[in-house]
Image (cartoon, rainbow over all chains, first blue to last red; front, side):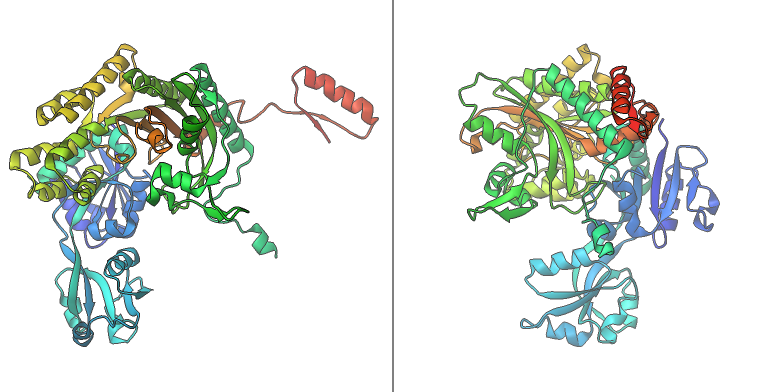
Length: 213
Length: 367
């Protein structure tokens, strides 16, 4: 059977993803979680794993450099990558929300002024506010977005929330939920056909392991 | 000044040396195959009225064109595709010609669509249109010509994913979806989101039907897929679509071509354009489809002469990328060494000698 390459998002989802692969019968070397190696072969020789930044997973898969990948739905929404998305892996549950200081939240968006929104998700954010007819000024940050309202950089933020603790610690409240996010298995459109047996095997093994009906 | 001179707009490319030769070779080989199947070449204008493309592709798609105004103030657009141009020509100027009409084309198209997955703003399409026949023979012919072209090029390990829009349409009709829900359903099937699809359908149909639709997202494989799909649906439109697929597949089998064909009932991407059989071409080393085709029976009508049509196009850029690695060593990629003639002596003698060598088929370089 064809060997397949799987891109796994480093960080938040990595450990749970590798555990799932383990349960699905892949023999992931134990050092995969801790070592700095970015490419690891599955001991059964069925696949190799590459570990990349979450936002890069859809890129590797869309170009077909990786046949499949695991990343959050938040990342997928932002990338708009043309890939297959056959499985909700049901871990890494979190929400993409609009948040603000309680004062800003109570005030709402000023209908006469442009709202300043800080985020790591420019595309999702623009779409959301455009649909609601709220004019915004987008401030694209690459991290610590929760700081922006406290420092007066932005009125609102759009960010990922898992427990809500970081928001609370920075004095922010949730204004609205844009989307729920969980980890997804994505598959390259060409690999879906060219390596069909291997890809179909991967999907069904992971579906069983993830406990999807 | 020099920095602005060397700056190239994103999404365009300059191509030279072996890459240029590979592309010309591909073009020649594919056009040769099409000509042998009696498709005669039509050379199309680089730009035409923007309205023409909006009519052919739909308003939304035509938003992606590069537009500018002509001297008469009319809005023009660089061609984003070839089929609208061909269809309009056939519907107007070829009205009296006997059917079917077989036409081929090769050239660059331009789309203002964010470059991604290796796609540029400008890319080269080679394709054909078979116009005036509603018979399945025409669909099959187009499919077989596509396979022959790929084989001629030596594209290894390619797969043609064969589908039929009637299968999805039959299901959507039965669910009585409005346009919005239909678009959502289509997107979920296109992305094979089995779980979301199940949730979405909860308000439309019972559990058993939902499980059947869920299978839709994973129905890809050989001809056993057609039989499996027959168990899942009962509406006439879907059944007729499966019958057509089965007939084409059987013919492909008889011709020994079945190993490069995959049935893929989840391919619904071209739903708003295609009306019957559709196919996409995949090959190792390229992450997206390097060609696609199918039946589009509603297009010609938009140009004032309703008649059926089938066609396909290949993306030359991706073909070149796919073929280039295996091409490097061939003689076409690296022509024979040139005979170098010095121009220091009598120039007339030098050119006479060059002509003699050329007549022997040698390459000459005067230094």
